Image 1: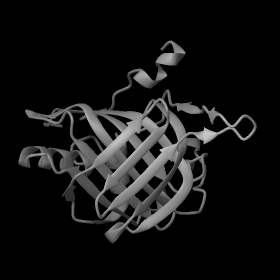
Image 2 (image 1 turned 30 degrees about the horizontal axis):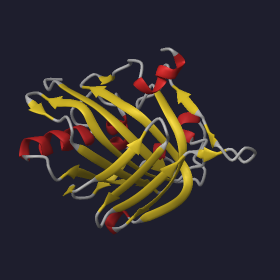
Image 3 (image 1 turned 90 degrees about the horizontal axis):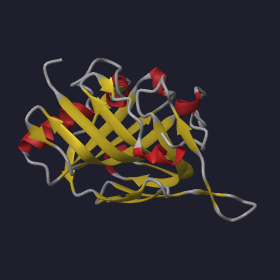
Image 4 (image 1 turned 60 degrees about the vertical axis):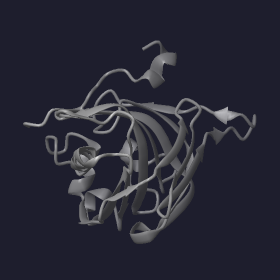
Length: 222
């Protein structure tokens, strides 16, 4: 690859599966089809000479069946604060065109989509506490989403559950899990409630996922 880039994002994702999402547990999807929305903020990033740190982004996907069967539809939303060079850079990364095939989630998901909506450049309001497993997202006219921890039915306290992926993942090395509810309007219309949510660090470059310990796993002494 000729482009040199870094994408390190603190990201919240909510999909329509139960808390044992098939993508992470090598299982079929809960309902036989997949709908998902990722929203993140770059804590570090660049694309060649273009800085990306501080910008927000969202990718919205829906498939009529299992992801591996293809036929998906997707839409990218890029922070309205991005200038022309930054918009081009982020759209290139999100569409999976700036990396080895299959080396990160953007490349994999794009390869499973056949319908691409026009990219939107909008205000993305995002409040996410990855350790607490909470999130509030609003993209005017497009998306509203909320997330919180799963609650222990016996104690009434937040139930802590996380997933670590030493290898085999094209998305993250570690994620905190919770429950989310999302409503999407427009071309990607969909909604789901109290379903799988995860909070992770997406750390990619032109070669794929960067396998470094996530700050979220600091409690493990990693």
